[in-house]
Each structure stands twice: as C-alpha cells, then as structure tokens.
Amino acid sequence: MDENRNQQARTSLTAWQTHKPMDYLQADTNIQWVLQMHMGEDYSRHLPMLSKAASMSASRMDSLAINSNRDENLPRLNRFNNVGERIEEVVFHPDYHELGACVWDTGVLTVLEQPGNELLSGALSYFIAHNGEAGHACPVACTAGLIKLLQQVGSAEQKKRYLPQLLETDYAKRLHGAQFVTEVQGGSDVAAISCVAVADTKCKGHYRISGEKWFCSVIDAGLFVLAARPEGAPQGTQGLSLFLIPRIVDGEVNDFTLRRLKYKLGTRSMASAEVDFNGALAEPIGPLEEGFKNLMGIVLDTSRVHNAVAACGLMRRACIEAQTYARHRTAFGKPIIEHPTVAQILARMKVITSAATATTFRLLAMGDRLATGRASEDITKARRTHVNINKYWTSIQCTQVVRDAIEVLGGNGTIEEFSVLPRLYRDAIVLESWEGTHNTLCAQVLRDFATRKLHVPWLADLSDVLSSITHS
Image (cartoon, rainbow, N blue to C red):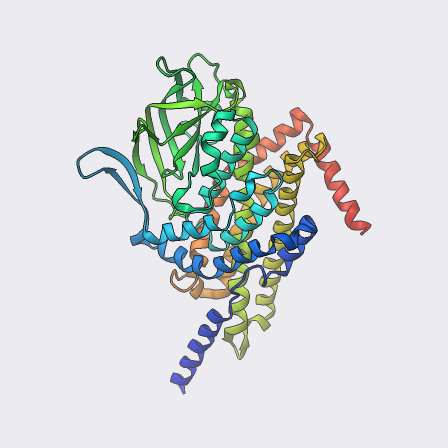
C-alpha cells in the first residue's frame, strides 16, 4: 500500500511537469489582453514573433538556462592566452552561448531599429524572463540602453560604426553592450565617481580613462558605456560625462584589467566583475556637459524599465509553477489548490502579477509615444516618476511572489533541482538592488517632487487613468 502511494505521488509530480504550458503567450490570457490593448491592430502582425519567443522560452531556453546556471558551469575568468598575452577573457559554458543564440534570434534588439517598438521589445523580454535573468536578460537591457543612447545623442559616425552589430539577430555576429557606473566609494552616489578622462594627445577627439569600476555587469561585452569625469571638470554630477569604450582596439585588450568576477547571490550565469582602467581609449557619446542627464534619462531609464519587465516575467513563471503544482499535489485527501489558504496565496500572486504587468506595459507604451513624438511634455514628466516608482514596486513584489510560490511547493520549493523557483528567488533579490536601490529610488522621487514639482503631472496622469476606468 505504501509503495502504491509513493508511486501515485511521483506520478502526480510527473503530471505537474508535463502539464506546464509549452507556449507562455497562449497560456497567458492577461498578457494577451494587455498587448492587444496597447498594440491595437499591430498585435496580429506581431503575433508570430511573440509566439516564437514564448514557445522557445518554455522549451529550449528553459533547459539551457537550468544547465548554464549549475555551479560547475558558471562563467570563469581567463586572463592570459597560451603564450602569456593578456586577453581578459570570460569563459562560458556552451549552453550559455546556445541560450544566447535563442535570445538574440527572437529579435528582441533588432526591433529597436525603428523608434516606437519598445512595447514589442519589452514583450519579447517578458517571455525571455520567464527563465529568470538566465545570463542574458541583463545583456539585452544594457544593449537596448546603448542602442537608444546612440540613436538619440550619438554622432553619425558612431551610429554607422556600432548600430548594425548592436541590432544584430545573429548571436555570433552581435556586438553587445555594458554600462559601468558604480565605484567602490560611492555605489548609488553617482556624484562620487572618480574615474578620470584625460584628452588623448595622439588621437583627436578621444580620451584615456583611468580608475576603478566596482560592479561591472556584462563584463564580456564588446562595447562599454562608462561614466567618468573629464580632467578639470567640476565635482558632483555636473562634471560627469559618458564615454564609449571598445573592448578590443587594434586586436588587443583596451588597457583594462579584470580584478575578479563577482560571486553573486543571483544572476550568476551573467558575468560581473571589478575592473581597473589603465588609460583605456574612449570617445565621448553626447556632449560632455550632458553626461549625467543622458545617463539618467536614457541609460538608467531603459534599464529600470527592463528591470520591471524582468520582474513581471519572473512573477508570471512563479505563478505557473505554483498553480500547476497546486492542481496536481495532493495533501489531506485533496489537491492542495482546494485548500483555502493555498487558494488565497495563488489569488494574491495572480493579482500582484497582473497589476505589475499592467503598470509596466503601460510604461512601455508611453515610451513608444515619447519616441515617436506623440507624448506631451506633461506625459514625459509623469513617465519619469512612473519609471522610478514602478521599478521600486515591481522588484519588491517580485521577490514576494516568488517567495509565495516556494511556500506553495513547501520543502520541494527549496530544492534547486526540483523547480526553477530557487533560481528565480535569487534573481529577484538582485533585481531589487539593480539600477537603483529602494532608498535611492524613493529619494529621487521625493527630490523630483520637491525641486521639480513632478508630482503635479504624475498625479494628473493617474487621475486620467482612474477616470478612464471609471467611465469605461
């Protein structure tokens, strides 16, 4: 009898695994509704691309993300080649690169070639993020920010040189970006940046970057966006400028060294490092005096929206794991989904995930209006506040939703090889700190309210939203 019960339990767990959706779009009526509402007639045109990404994420991407995140398969640093030349190479497991090929093949970056496709790119990122950060969500976000930076403030020559590869769908041909801001003495205090840019005497219009960057994600990138202070510039944020630093110059490492890779709690498949720049060749991107403005308004703005999109993807995957498990797991004589406390947890998870998806995809749609000249000045101001509050709120809720999913699975939810949830939980905690901690974001919002009166357009926009709901 006991053996029979044991087998029945294993059979139900097997059924749980096989009953998970194989197309994250088809199984998600909420995202279908959200996308149809914002895309309108374009939804049917984008449907093949969305379905491809959603089904690939539920199948091949899933298994590759699992394997590339195992302890023995994490990235490692290889500083020298076989003849002792410094190469500062990050070595990844083959599954990491195969997963990257799947991600790039979705077109998540290619669609950004035309302004007004932030919503489409965000939807593709949402499906990719059902596998957590998976080593590639952060590179996609950083590359998207670099694409927008070049499109908005890059020179014609910079656009011609870099954009084609940044927009590439072929993973093997891609150029992917990274953004290096954080330093050991400042963290989120960008005004404390001490990396120095000195005008190069031999290469007109170029600079040499010297200094340390403390937390550099996507350290394997081919092109870095870096915040530094030109020699003689004032202290504080007004003295900061943005620079482009290619990884390789004339076939050699561009005068930087990697101290070590970060051994992080989450997002472990993606390589982060500490970097020393020793006179790296760089060129300004945008006017020198507008570095901080472009850093906040383009680079970090993009990353904060992507952070929220990733949080939504993680939450939705947590809901899938918990809901399907609760239907197949039996305890006290019935499926646990029929127990009121479990049903309450599942309902709360669904509501929070739906709310986060609604606010985040509205932001993506606002971004498209802004990019195509269809947003008023007040909407532009309101969006700034929405981005910061939404990043703060979605990241907190993501950790809680994944934590709730683990609770539904009980002890099984804590086992790395049983489900994706432990990995999602670690990634969720990292999402809380990325692109601005809670305190940093709250301080920025309050400062904007006090000094720029941004609460006025923000509250007006909220009032319009509530009014449209009331009268719909």
